[in-house]
Image (tube, rainbow, N blue to C red; front, side, top):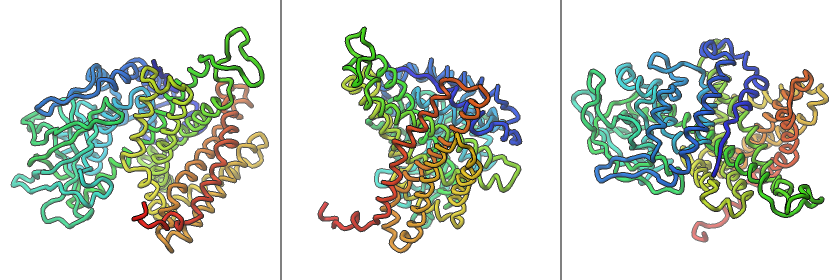
Amino acid sequence: MPSYKAPVDDTLFLLKDVFDFDRYGNLPRFAEAPIDVVEAVLSEAGKFAEKVLQPLNRSGDEEGCTRDSSGNVATPEGFKEAYKAYVEGGWVGLAGDPAYGGQGLPHFLAVALSEYVIAANLSFAMYPGLTNGAAAALWVHGDDALKRTYLPKMTTGEWTGTMNLTEPHCGTDLGLIKTKAVRQGDGSFAITGQKIFISAGEHDMAENIIHLVIARIEGAPAGTKGISLFLAPKFLVNADGSLGARNAVVCGSIEHKMGIHGNSTAVLNYDGAKAWLIGEENRGLNAMFVMMNAARLGVAVQGLGLSEVAYQNAAAYAKDRLQGRSLTGAKEPGKPADPIIVHPDVRRMLLEIRAFNEAARALMVWVALSADEALESPDPAAKRAADDRIGLLTPIIKGVFTDVGFANAVKAQQVLGGHGYIAQSGMEQFVRDARITMIYEGANGVQALDLVGRKLPKDGGRAVTAFFGEVSAFLAENKGDAALAPYLAPVKAALGKLQQATMWLMQNGMRNPDNAGAASHDYMHLFGLTALAFMWARIAKAVLARQAKGKSNEALDSKLALAKFFNARMLPEASAHLARLSSGAETLMALPAAAF
């Protein structure tokens, strides 16, 4: 049976030692979150994930969700009670606006918490995760009346939320949507159409579900310029806040999926459902992007969380499973065989997973702290820089974390051998659950195109130039540190390759757009490797500082070995990415479509 231990100590080390938590003390939300409070919150969150959510993961996968003839969906046994406890514990509204019942704590805390919840039970995590994203979009773009009616119970999680974009004939190309909105005399709209793949679209864990739906108002322009965003509740809400009649939105079916069986992925049929406009007419994508960007960051954390839980179980198995003898002689001569942790190839797989996980967690924490800066920094320059950083890194961490997270789940499964293929170990569930993360909230090929086509040229390349500047400044500031030098040189080399790749795109992408498309996947992963190497250099600096003060320990010292492994065995892939992307589009586009 699988197990999970939340990496609370590692998160705290990153906050205190790597990112200098005290430097964020000028942000209002941090006044209520000194480091001792942060530690207490993360510790309790870890316990909830370990003791309440993780035991429901496998049973929820086996049972799945069920739909009755009326379109009502029941979640797996235990989910409803766990969600009630989650709401009562204040976890959904941890970073929510206090004006609507939230606790007003920093956003990075909610992100760190989400890793633990996701690793313990991804299917469960999706219900509150989507609710937070829907609440954020309403908070930014909704009018006061909608906020007063819906945000209090969405913020606390008493009501859940969804995002309704996809239709049977369109996914990424939302300009093709057919769902229509018809004006009503009372200022509302009637929504008619069908949405598919709607995560948490219908369930029994909350008394109301608030759907955010994109649709086209009659007479609106074609394409994405004619899309508007609407709020359509499962149950209409009376003036006094009580629930009224059932709205005309029904779950037509639930999808039979490869993984995330404990999450209700619904087909929703709208038949003149009553809805209200969020934001401006024909500016729905602008409003929905608030939720989409939050969801993409959330999915990035899913890649990390599944990679972490897969690693923990694979490492435990490798230290216990006896099979064969070490190539250099028996390490456990009193036993019939050595544990498989002695074998170099098993170590390779485990080290590749862990070296990614620890650097990815650092990158996640940095982006989460940047979100707090972007929201609340009193310094306009710092605020803009943080917002630029988030915009640039969002497609990178969504694409890289989930590509690598899935690959890592497969590696962890390989460590278990045949037992990894058997359901009882739980490892095959991690593989199945991880696979969707590469697809939803924008397939990873779309993330790569977004990076090279939008994020790099945005504002004249301001964000990418700033990133290069941050890495270069770190290298310059620490060039005299002899102990850190072995960790800096690989970062400098990777940065050089990334700058080469960026220049190649500038010179060749506009000349032939297919060059940009052909380069995008490798560019995204080259950028990701460079960012992870940067994180390892910052981690190494923090560990060396601890050692110099005599305050290190075995767990921290091991990070230096992991950093060296990453630089020696994983970072060289940067050269392959550069070679592939700079070969251009010719070989990709040469074969006629008919020849496929």
